[in-house]
Every structure is written in structure tokens, then in C-alpha cells.
Image (cartoon, rainbow, N blue to C red; front, side, top):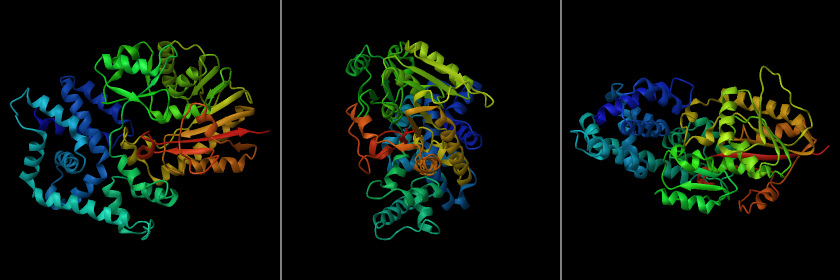
Length: 472
């Protein structure tokens, strides 16, 4: 298949992804099922291009608008422009795409590199020097603004500076504005944070058995030609050197490893369960955290995985069987009916449905789905979830709230509102829980009960964790 056709198919998927409110990987899978003649190399290449374009959607759109009088709605060219932006600024982002193109073109009569294709295609329609000048000018102007940020505060209410910074880092303005207002610059460089979401996320595994050490898993992967290394924070995590489909690996099929981001692992480690604790995983989904909590308890506790989505709970049952864990049971919360017992659980984990901005490296469409109104509605629902599930925490038990969001409106603001309404829940420092697993992690303040994990600082997905204790 010619590269031009690859970009055409990629453009079709991007068009669907920006209209449908569904995960991009689901859209891609559905698209490929409908076009079964597309080969495996082409599928990998299309997927890589789609996700890259969605990560850089705002940046590319800004440059396209500068040439609007010449563009003529050619969305295939927009994807080519995304590739060119990365060729100039983030060449490592397209290394895998380039190698797939080389593999593909070696099988066809189209004997040219990805770089040649990009340059030739854009040169046919525009002045490549002018495009390059516009891209570099944007980057330089934003670099100047960011450098002067400490002394020349950016007006987040009405300032053209915010518009071009938003374009440069491909992040909606209201998200960037929220970060600038909330995060202290001496701790969190919000511009590096935004830039980190332009890079692909690694594949992170978690040890899923107490019978093998982390090093032994790393050694077994190396024997298969898969290079990996220990994660920096979680003592159970393994990061792959290259992104591959690990689900077909025998170690995965035997339940010895699971796919779980290091930030998600840290949520479970913050719970710090005792072996016999009764745990409610209130918004369990497909149960990745339930599985890890069971491992931390040596399968001796009682874990109830609760969710409104029955199909996700069925997936958890499959994962539980593969892992050989016996302490997890499921509870389908249906039509506001439940059989949960109040003041019963030692730990209630509310991993609340959220914007998913913290996973934007993996799911970049989340950046473009979110609006101020949706954010407001999410925060309202998150407070309601905390309020509802808090009644199942026993006296002296713990309520752990987490999201995979980087928005303070979904994180600290939600927890603070809950605490104002529920003074019997008091903050509990997270540091002792992390110390129990020899995790050395920096907090903004001593004895802090909450933490936000950042891709550019912690090399995890973006997560928020807060821990409260029911005192009376």
C-alpha cells in the first residue's frame, strides 16, 4: 500500500475520532474490522500516525490556519504537516513510523523514505521554507514568553500569549489557564507538563505474582529479546524499552505480569492494605487496581470490585482467573440498587471517572473532548461519588480518592469540598504508606495527604491521590 493511501486511511480515522465520543483505540479496531484487507504493517503504521496527529492536533491546526488560503481542506496534508512538525522538533516521535514506512516501501514500488515523502509532498503545495519559518517562529516566540513567565505574568483571562502557547503545546487554552493559576511554578513547570503530553507513553508492566521476583521477570523478557528495566518509583513495576503488544506473551497469558501504568500502581500502594483488610474498589472498571490490591494482600483479604458497567466487571473476572486470585468478587451497581454494607470496609478506593487528561499521551483525544462545562459536571459527580461511597468506610478506616486527571477542579478542589461537608474525614499523610514500600517521592509539603503525579516529573501518567481517615 502506498504511503499516500496510508495517510488517506489515517485521515478517515481522525475524522471519526474527532466526532465520536469513544476511545480512539476502539474506533481504530472497529475501522480495521470493517477493512480486513489492511495488512498488519499498515495497521501499525496507521495507528501510530493517528495517535501522533491527535497529540499534535492543536499545533497542526494553528499552522494550517496560517496557510488557510492555500490549504483547500486537504486533511491528508494536515497529517503530513504533523509528521513534518515532528521531523523538525521531535524526531524521536516518528522513529517507529519511519521504520514502518521503510518496511512497507520495501514491499512496494514506492522507494522513498518518510522524510523524502514529507518534504516532497509539502513542497508540491507550499513553500517548505515558509512552513518551516512559521513553525520555528512559533516555537521561538513561546520560548521567549515561557522564559519571561516568572517576571511577566501571563494574563490567563485575555491575552494573545495564551493562544499561541496553547497552540505550541497543543493543549486547549482553558486547561492551560487552569494549570497556570493553580500549580506553583517553583514545583511544577506547566509548560513542560503540557509538552510532556506530546510524547508517547511507555508500556509499563506490573509484577502479578509473588512466586517470581521483578528481576526474574526482567531476565525472562530479556531471554525473549525484550529489553526492560525496573520502574523508578513502584517496586512492582517494569518498563519496556520499546512499546510492543505484550498481551500475546506467555508471561502475560500465565498471569505473571499485568499491564498497568506506574501511576496507577502508586494509587494501590497509597492504600497500603493489611493482609486481612476488607476493601471496596468503588469504581473498579476492568479491575486493574483490584488485582494489584489482592497481590499486596497475598490474596488473603476481601476485595469487592464494584462498577456500573457489567461488561468491564466480566473482563475483571477473566483477569482474575488468569491471575489465579481468589479474594476478589464483583458487585454490579445497577439502577441505583446495591447490596453494599455501610461502615464495613477498612479501605474504600474511589478511583473516580474523570476527564482522563493525565492519560493524554495514550489517549490524546481526551484533550479535545474536554470543555469547561464537562469539567464542571465531572467535578460535581466526583463529589457525589465521594459522598456516597464514604458511608461504607468503617470507623478508623480509610477513604482513598484518585483520578487520572491533571485538572485541580477534579482533584484537590473535589477533596476539599468533600472535607468541608464531612469533617469526620481527616487528612492522612501519604508518606508512611510509600515509605512502607521504600518509595522515595517528593511532596510539596511535609505530611501531605495528597499528591499529583506528573508525566514530566515522575515519568508516570498523570494521577491524583488523596487519603482520608474516618475518625468518628
